[in-house]
Image (cartoon, rainbow, N blue to C red; front, side, top):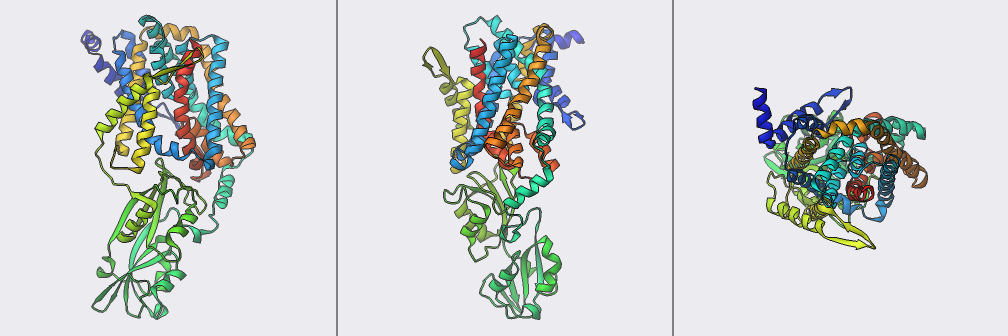
Length: 560
């Protein structure tokens, strides 16, 4: 039986690839306290174990899977990447540049100390910074080195070993640093600091917010009492900001919304209200009743993508004033998200192009608001496969172009070229959704499967040589991994706080984003009870995804 399995794996390496993926994902899900290894590291680890039997896995598989991953990253980051290249985001962009430059310097410093080869050095950077994209672009660069296949395969093997050795501390170390050490170094109380930033963003003035966070919209029917008799709808809504009257039933007449309509005792009204005001509606309007006809006004929920040049870069309060003025539109904001992460819905929160505003309200108002804000995001399961496949082709060709600065050859590599083209396509799609559709679920599948499969193939290719490499450089890599994991965020922490003067909550989110690590940001959100770190996370995440990927070829060039 064992001989049959070994023969099947050796003669059909695709079986080994999927076995490494499946078993690696299962292992990656195992929770040890609040830590879990993750799919990519799990797949790479299982690839290393399975690879000990000696397999001939096509090198092309590694490139194909990495292209899927890096394309999805670029497409998702495109809108944010280009929208943050402006004066208002300059500090966060500079923060990412400093962190990535410090990280590159730390990697090359440890290379100089221990004289690692290009494979060990690239794997050190990818694992200690928990950024597998470095390993992908470094692989492309290694493929261009003037070495024979045996030497290249040894570098690939060393890269996988270095990644496996340094990844564990890279993940845990960054979470602990951002969530525990950094606040202590700055003497920051996370909850007090979050409250301070929320006050700066205007939470003390709830009347200025489009809606109040963490509430749900409800519809109710009430019979108008004498307390509201003779009051125009506009006047009633002016007094009670979280209510809109959508329909009035007067006898046999059904009167649709008209802000000039004067309410009369006995009218039955259908209203939108925030849940927190349900208890006082009877006092303001009259007794609640069950009346289907008054509640049958048309409603809609929609996600609106902000693309307006006029409104992008303004605060929530400024956008509300520009859109609504003194007349209510009968819409409420459920959430505001950026790259899938919820922003704090506070008056002074600045919105940027690509932000998604989830609205609920009357259909006509939703459409009218969407026309001013940008566009309604249609929920579709279909992907524009032709555009994305062509994008990968063009990106690969762009990556093969090279030039020279003096005697130094400069080449993006396939990974860098695909990333660049994906950024452009993602940005263009955010403004012209009819071209290049790639739903969020498809983005996740491209990214998660591509990266996990890439890790599995890298592990399988490492093969039996992995054991001897681990024995010879294991301790040096562990020490180097600690330095590369902790030095960049340490330097960036003080640079961000005392040079850029970033607010601590924005700074901690920026630290997590600049190292493309969402787990550490979630730790800060959990401990502070606030979504404010998202403000710093998204810009730095988009910038660092590009900068760290570019580091791969630089590491290989210097180390080789």
